[in-house]
Image (cartoon, rainbow, N blue to C red; front, side, top):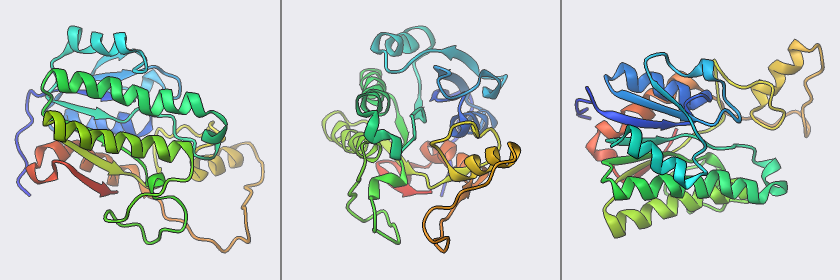
Length: 245
C-alpha cells in the first residue's frame, strides 16, 4: 500500500514509557514524526521514552491534563493511544479502576481529537475482545468479551465507530495478541506469561503451568507489531478498519 510522508507531523503517543508504547514512539520518530510522549509512569519507566521525543508526565484519566496536552503541545496530526492497564483476570476485581483507566481515559483523548480535527486516532485494543472459544480469531467475528478489560476495550472500539459516524473522526484499531520483547515489565505478576516466566527464572523459582500442560498459545514479538501500528495512519486504506496483529 502507498505510504504517505510523515516528516514533520506532530503526533501524540500515550503509554510511551511502557512496553508497546515506547516501541511505537521509536517507530514514529524513525518515520520523521515529531513525537510528544505521555505516560503517568504507573506501569512504565521514563528510561523507555525515546530521547528525541518531547516527554510529558501526565495521567490521561484527567480530562484537564488531556486538554493541556493539546493546549501546550498540539495540535496533533495523529494520536496513538497505547496507554492501558492490561490485566484481564485481575480486571474482575478492579472494575472501576479498569473502566477509568481503559475507557474513560480513552474518551478524554477521543474528545480532544474530535475538537481539534485530528486526522487519525490509532487505538490499541486487545485480542481479549473476542472472549473465550472464538478460534481462530478473525476480524469479522462479533466480539464477545468475557471480562471487564475486554469489555472496556470493545467499548472504545464502538465509541470510535460512533465518533466517525457523528464527527468524521477516522481511526484505526489494532488487536494485539500476547506481545513480548524488550522493555517488557517482567515484575508485574498479572500480565504476560513470558514476563512472568522470566521473572520466576531470575528468582530461581518454578514456572507454573496451569491446566494439563498440553494447551498452546501464540505470541508476537514487539518488532513485528510496533512498526505496523506506527505506519498505519500513513496508509489511507487503513482508515476505520480493525486488524488483528
